Length: 498
Image (cartoon, rainbow, N blue to C red; front, side, top):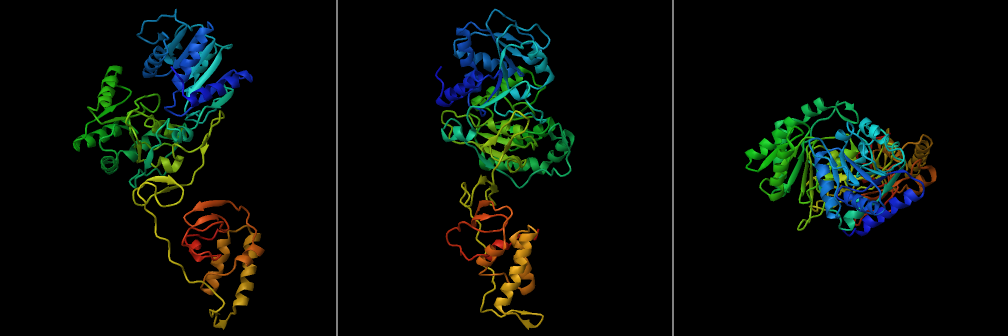
């Protein structure tokens, strides 16, 4: 099987890490980028050198996927799984972590851990103790644990093979359109346990008929006719969602961890063939599930976990023949909390991950996007506010019945600006002081402010008003059609004093 260019590059980076002295590396690639394919290529090369390999997974479905992928490389593997016959004569063994922890460990000089963000758990640690001299390779799209614990140890090196943004730009993944919704659960007061919202309170916040009803309506507007995977907060919540879809005449079914492998397989087969359009689940398909034809993800599960958000959305980003788009219906506020799935991310083995982006939610279609208006999906752009009258030389200003000449107003304002600078206040504070005293906004003060005010931050950001510093409001550029007088009072709206 031929690797794609980005997969070859990722493999080269991994090999270079080991050549530099690494013994336990995590290979990070986005969901759908082919991590198992890369592992199969590594195992194929290991077989040529007479080595034995152990491939560890934590779910039954992942075992079958790995065995199928290995077969595509012409490799027959043994399986270590409860109620499956073992054949340890094969040099490649694919093992369930839950089964292997209770059985004799096979020989291996290379150990793979699929979904490696679980590797700090006790079951994994106890198994890895049997392989102190083996090369360790972890595979994951999100190298951070839900509870924030570090992945160092067991790993010593992180290799980022490619980012979601890079693969979407290259056409290797489908960049999803993310739509938020105004009807979201109220999470105020919910406690965080082990890195996520506590389950009982989260279920109480989400299991509401009006919230569930808005999901069905939204899907009919944005995802009708497309294969859909829904993520719910509980079994009861998932069943509520399915029942509402069914009442609307839409073929939908529910799955959870209590369903047998046979039931899961049959249900997913019906989704694959189009017999049903929607499968709703609770904590079942956040990892490892591979159905490229999926085009819509309904996120009805709020999460405090950056990793879980990325894993859920990643289910629909795989390309497939005839698939041109993917849609996320975020009914949980996760995009506003964690960013878009293509945001550049600072991954770390130390237990934390972060991305930085400045997002907007369109007030018309609720698309979540980065950058200035207009909305890239519907073209909506808010009307620019009308200018507010400002102070000028030829305007007469009275304070307490006395005429205050423009020069005196400027002199007074210079002192206020200097005070704002000394106290590290925003420049808007000084302008509000001027407005409170003279009843008008200051104008023609660019030179005065530049002379008397030193911005403590001075970080420019892109807004619909052009590039400006969020602290002192100084602008680099203005959008077309907007005036360029310094201190334009339109910038002062909704800016309270610090």
